[in-house]
Length: 563
Image (cartoon, helix red, strand yellow):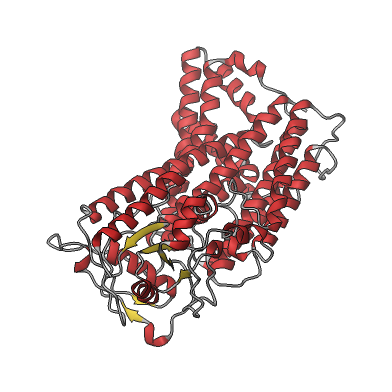
């Protein structure tokens, strides 16, 4: 077992968790189905100037909290920049993972030797390697742009919550995983490879470009699943540049080694020899692809209320997947293309220890443990059938009796952490007036990873939980829910001009028209008259900072003297 295997698996694990974190960026900052932003009159006084034509619409009035519209635009741009950086880093790590695949790694010394032997000077060999590397980058960036051109920006926006697409993505990642396990290889037609290879013999830039294209085509059986996973995540992000930026990061990681080894040929001697460890890298990536695929299936289950893929089932599958990965690292499981593990190397031993530790860490989650480090990946805590953790939160914390009246939509939505939550804006505001409490609107989503992370890592904080339980009326509005509204509630929005057909349509349109925002989570604190108390807030994983936000709203509400 080569030490290189250890660094390879580390890169793969980092790629996996970066891809998961991208889902936070993807699903939390895009506009949702049937929602289209339009220009607002510059003379408009704020969110009051826009209304949605719906029955019993309660007006949200703006308090002097600064120019909310401009601040939301700035926040949206910052979030977009962060998401592009996230997709770039994930692509970059994916590129390094691809470099360790058996279809590419052996090509590295061969290609660099070709440059050094063909050229009569080091300068020429370096320039050829640079052109080769730039060609690799150009090929993959063009691929990323093609995804945008073929689907279009509007279609990309719909991918993150569309049930059919998410289910297709789930199946696609499963196919990729099975391919890495050695059941079959995903290859391109040999005619394409042969035609491109013939043109790689040309002189000058054209020959180097086709040489790079040949590498891309020949290595597709290894890179295809990685590229596919990356493009799935980047495309569903909804950003026009997402796929291109992801492919740029991927290609840059592939191109850098070719240029560096051409500049410093002596480094080639330090490379480990090709062998069975390359296949092991593929198999490990296959396990990670399989684990990631379950997140897409969970998104579909939540959005369409199938109610069968709950938190326990998700955790059981992850425990089995990572448990099998640990056994594979120990050499107890072998696939058809694997070499026998004659002895257990130190790097492989430590990787197995890490994998088994992670597996055991997830086991208490079957009884409701929050598992805050991976909570963003998991279905909501409310889907847990047997939960010892949530019931312990309210012990000694509850000072006001819970409202036992049947709430609208409570048959399809479930309150997190046993909180007293409303799922309809008008109903929640009416109750707030009745009990004279401030309101916290939580714009959330089934596929919102940051929302689940907030609910699992910040809301359970003792002080934060006390404020939410005792001092606020919480209204959770799901912007990606696919439940069809009753016919009499299906209206045409005066904001977007589009038909409001689902619960998700209704609340995403409400968030955009009233607060000029479309990111989740998005927390808005209101008084009982629907006036904004303090500047709304997005995800904040610092419990102390989030508590200050809640306390500032309570202080403003008490100071207003509204009864």
